[in-house]
Length: 167
Image 1 (cartoon, rainbow, N blue to C red):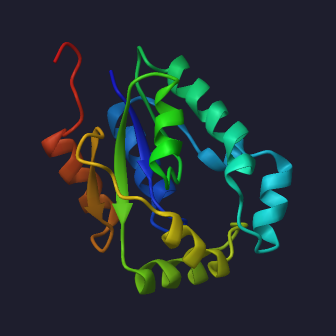
Image 2: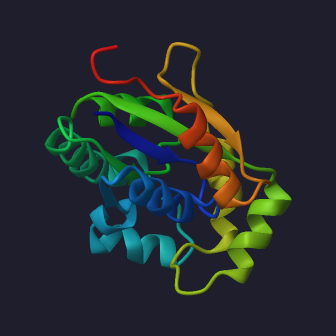
């Protein structure tokens, strides 16, 4: 099985796509926000971008989850904005990245209409500035989030672009 990391900036639909994909595949799901220490959430809530040092324990915790699910597969969300973050995640085990990408206006609109999330739209520009798209040598694909989440998941289930066991 493969652990799929649903990545992208805040507001790109990671939770919506990730939960639907995990349900359809019958594998465990984990929400990256649950791995943040309280101090990170407090910083983001006040509009302060996280530093690489702030993110490191969070990335290691997600990497451990990936390692624990390497045999049976799973889906986990994580912004995974920089290649070095994705490299850290891969220390836990094989991971395949689904990058949910969308234009700034679409993402900002989504962020302003959702409720119950600590990430303010004021941090979107810092996330977009940090975003390093998947490299050609990184396992994964990029999907435009202008399509409804159901269509995105249906296309992924049809095409199954991630590695298959034994492949």
